[in-house]
Image 1: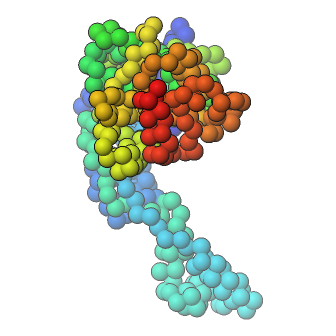
Image 2: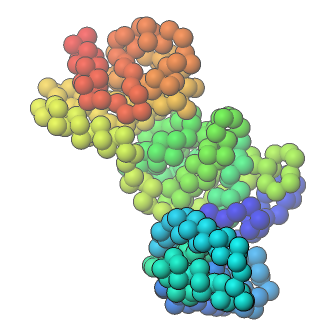
Image 3: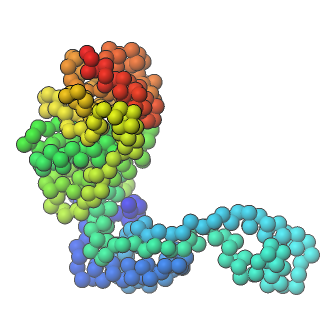
Length: 395
């Protein structure tokens, strides 16, 4: 991800236009030189590597692009976690303060004496005294980026950075593959995003995703989640997204339009990700309920073009019941689901986080919850899910 000072965009007629880069010979050369510098720096300190990169950064007229490239390279590198130097500093400072009561002849003698008393050489003390500062971290594994993938990552990061201030984003996916749609909506839930979902087989899938302004208590976190969803969306073949953002110093909303025509490179890892709570619940259910088959649930049409995105499904005795979880950020979605389930018959069990239930007086006694719902704290239990599923089956 790029910081806001590294974003490049233009504002024209109320629209924000990200300034993407093309793989020209000059840009490819810049990317290759920076990657060569960092890839050859294994074992060196971060501060020293950044100092060594300064000549490369200033060899180009596109300094802002170069700084953006370097930010992404550093993010993709692995640095050794330095041991805490707090105890060593405390001992060294205490010894130094004591020695200053009777100063030695010069500064070098003072350093040598302090180092000796803490059991180190003067050189080792200088090296270890602040070894836990970020700039002292040593590179252990360089990035696996190539010049081409770095440029692609840079363009994606430019668009992600603009999405951090999005108020709302409307997404249209024209891919008709049911598997792609299901995995995309799973990624949506993994990113903890709120969305109104509509679509039918053979037609475009439409997502109206609420942005940070709709979740005021965690706006910056939500904006980051919205940006993290973009790689999953860009993995689709035909898509478009329209967001309203406030980049830079803008005081009014600007329109940002992104489509597959921009050539943004997606990341299919987001489509295959299974949230931790779902993975744990699936495993626990399989162990506690061996006669049942626990698996991934397909999208569930609710009528009127609306779709539910269950987290999993339970198949047993020739019947299938889907399970959908609602966390603390799913209040609006929960309202819609309670309204839809007012009429019995839908083979769906809903689980509601107690943190959300506390904001809804009487939710635990709601007819829908009594008939086909359960409460959970952070992670659902297999016992609660099984009880709710069996209740629906026996109704």
